[in-house]
Image (spheres, rainbow, N blue to C red):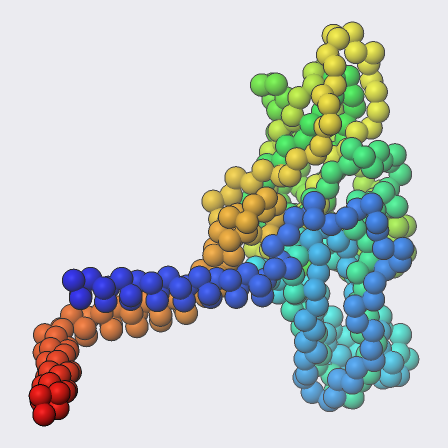
Length: 411
């Protein structure tokens, strides 16, 4: 009975510590567990929010500037680096980003001399996760150099796209999502409600830059994309084995002429239309084919474009149609790219994130517990003997006290 109590106590301690660690982890990453639906799109910021704006000294040699910046999923971020010294014979810069889920991006690498302080590098990045991102700016220079480092939270994706596209957007029926793809997570499923005799449009493009050095070293080519659309059991084929777009946002550091690019989404390859023959939920499956050596972020969009029929099949539109959240069929938990509707979901997501991020800590804790259990099992007879001895001693002292008290009462 005593041994059973000890086991219960040990189990209770282990579970309590695990829950406390999980709650702590959930608090730390509370900004990371967020879907695009958590962002209030009706009250957009009137102007970009400056996240970092400072002239930084990078001394002769190699040095790193690290920034811990909070990003929101489905937002576009603008980076700018401009030199403010006239010359540097050697100037190399790399920009890296690590997300809350441990995804790693090498935004660009630059190697050249600086002449007459004309060097300026800028690009944009679409975030697939919410939470604190670690930005490392690594500079190797032959002379001391001052660089103006500027970073701003520019616009939510739907506002950004609406601002620069030539397409007419019905904002009330517009859905967008930035999702991360890699060799281990190469597909995504979305669900979108459509109405009979209505036209809808899709678009799909990459929203993160890739270092030119990494592209050349890995012989990288844009992966092919395929998309299947299903409505009421009927399947339609879109994007049939065509290469995905090069980095499509304005400020394309992968394109030599990005400084002269018009700020529009001029490529029409991925803008496709669909006419709904009935009212229902459209299931959209997207997957990438080919070698994917990097973490890649792609934006997907679907919106209602207008009427294309008079509704002769007499199907009434559904009431209170809302755009559901994307369905995820990945085997790996998508802690950052799906909604958390209940406290239980949030707890489970936090637990999964804790295990993923702290597996080595759990290994040490569980190893220690197993070691203590083994020691206790091996020497439990010694522990029992000690416990019995202490108990016998306590009982003896209590008995002596009682005897002395009785003796005093008799006197």
